[in-house]
Amino acid sequence: MSEIGEITIVRGAWALTMGPEGAIREGAVAFDSSGVITAVGKAEELIAANPDASVVGDGNGIVLPGFVNAHTHLTEGLITGMGETAVLWEWFERVVNPSGIQITREEVALGTRLKAVEMLESGITTVNDMCCHRNLGSLASLGAVEGLSEMGMRGVVSFGAEDMYDAAPSADVFMAEHEALADLISGEKMIDFRIGIGTVLGMSDELFERTIKAAAENDWAVHTHLAEVREEVTESTLLHGGSTIQHAERTGLLDHEVIAGHCIWCSETDIGLLASKDVAVAHNPVANMILASGVCPVPRLLREDVRIGIGTDGAASNDSQDMFGAIKAAALLQKVHHLQAVAMTAPQVMEMATIGGAKALGMENEVGSLEPGKRADVVLLDGNGPELAVLHDPFQQIVYGATPRSVSEVWVDGKLRVTGAETVGVDRVALASEARESARDLAIRGEMKGESAYAGPLDFEEGK
Image (tube, rainbow, N blue to C red; front, side):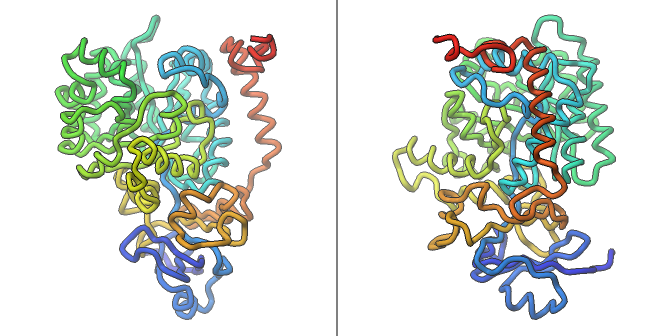
């Protein structure tokens, strides 16, 4: 056991623990210098019990656990703001694939650092990433680990392998990147590995079978996408006689620990399989709306006790990594889809964004709530700004009123990563300049004329 050392107490008008202690008026959390939460409770009681503690917060803000971003693609950090008129498969061809053929490990690391700032400053402390690229041999996915590690974020990283395209290399090459990624992550304290399946239909039978076998042999959890678009269900039914969820169950994929992005086009049979196989779902409302993919049946899944987290999805399909945008969209989308104000509530959304996301990733014993013994991933929202000055109901005010501007301080594993609403140790101008030049070069190499202003005139410039 390490020495307790200096205690930090973070106090607010409310502490939303998202754990057994619930929401505490005039609450606080205490943690030690090793990054372990030592207590939660009334601020005055924690301060009295720890008279030498450093106290952060004036009692007007909101204290909460760090958000868990349950699904994103950090390979997209440099390709935001394109392809808004495309549905999923068109978007692959217009945006993701041209850049994915070219992107390097160094560019992924840079894009990850850029998006890590955006995530941290929107209260995200843990991220579940799937790196998707076609520049095989470059080991580009390893760049996400390097970027997250440099920024001090907690994460899970996978390589979203797919080989159903012309001139794809052998399955050996894809498996080698999984192994290289796992090896790199083995030396990381706060980053875990999952084996990735980009999409079930995007893999050859050989690569799919080898991936499932590797998961079994190495006890690796899996990160994939399932039932994202209607066309996927149709194609899978024609090829395999059932949906991708049903095919995943028949082939043994769902016998492993799986988190699946989207799960929109689910039949009752599919929902039953997700529940019985304890598959976790990452709900990505903003990306689902941008790509016109559909609406995840979140209330139905919750009734079946399916583990659900909320994700931003990738920076190219969301165009930001802002968790406040994702949680607000998660609530509003269900309300308008069902035409019922009770279809989704602020406390439900907050649960999915915190402890629900942690459960979806099997990390609930470490993070997701403010509880003694857990790691100190803590967010303090500013109660002196216009968004949170009035707190009739802290859950509703966060979900419907807060923005990244509301974030004052963020700690990851007890280390201060954001203070005064800015990420610690980051030269923002220099990072933006480096990212801008790298994005320009990537767009030109990917011949993304018509999508990127860096690669040529845009349609509105040409009067189209």
